[in-house]
Image (cartoon, rainbow, N blue to C red):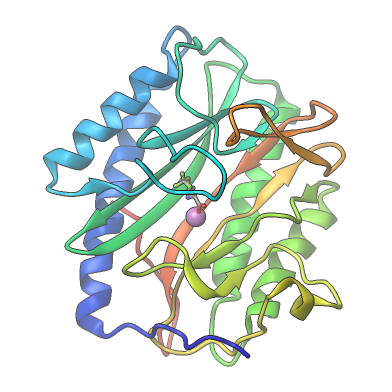
Length: 263
Ligand code: MF3
Ligand code: CO
């Protein structure tokens, strides 16, 4: 049994565009602020201030997870082999690191969600390539988000792009429907598509005008095995290989998809 999709009206999408704009403004500040010497806690404070100054609420702060402490910060800050959900701390960024920063807002009751991987100072060309491939995989998923495609078409567009460039997608984490809540039930947006998707609870929905979802390729340079740290949030690659994460929230239209998380 698949759950009802939450199709949005034009008015709701207009509010989600504002929620997404605030996320994007915070990302513009991160592009400036990420540099050697800064701590991830300082980045978190900067983002929380921007979000609240725009009359919005950080979507991640206090976010619940079964059998774990609630998420304690406004951003996820995941460094090098940390894939997602890194908790901001006193750790100091150093030249050559990469950092994936995930930001979510709630504005007038609607969510915006976007992640980006940033270079800290100069990075090696092969590391820049990982970032470029992951960003382009996101755009491949966005381009595939047109009628009369299905969610499987979106997932395979991401997977095909990543495979072709010799990297792996994370299989355990997916994008998701976004709306009044950050993770809408019944709409997973994977970055690959297994034969037995149904057993994972994934439904191959036809895209419909008014669907709003986050596409978020999580791409690993080495082996795709993951584990969670003792903090019960931070997800890392088991073999220590580098990984990247790019995410936009989009709305499906009769025409091109609308990217909601732009400035
Ligand atoms: N943007 C993320 C996601 O799509 C991060 C959520 S962090 C959490 O899942 F703490 F809010 F869970
Ligand atoms: Co997300």
